[in-house]
Length: 165
Ligand SMILES: [Zn+2]
Ligand SMILES: [Zn+2]
Image (cartoon, rainbow, N blue to C red; front, top):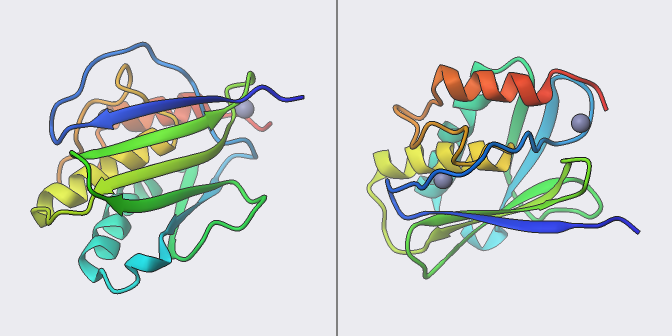
């Protein structure tokens, strides 16, 4: 039986705490595509969907190792998937299901349902998607700028993903 561990990273707007790096990553071959599925209840939330698409483009365009496929719809078992929700909370958080081989199997991402400043939302979406790809606060530099991760973040992705499972 596989052992699964669930980890949670919470971002209260711009504040981040440090912890150790992990090397967690989605299994597969190089240039993996990771499904990101936005709760169908948010189909009318065009600003949120746009922010998620912009925040994902920074990773997809910046890295030759990963692609994020953002769509509105449910995660379909057993596909590896990042499921995205909005609910009353403070800020945003990302939760992983990982196994002993540091492989990610499922991710839950939650954003406050209250209105966000759009620029902040894009950068937080980008930051949380970095967590969804396996970066934690030891190796993610902090909130993305202009919807894009830093070169250090992209280098950490390359280090974690430059192999075939
Ligand atoms: Zn964070
Ligand atoms: Zn691996």
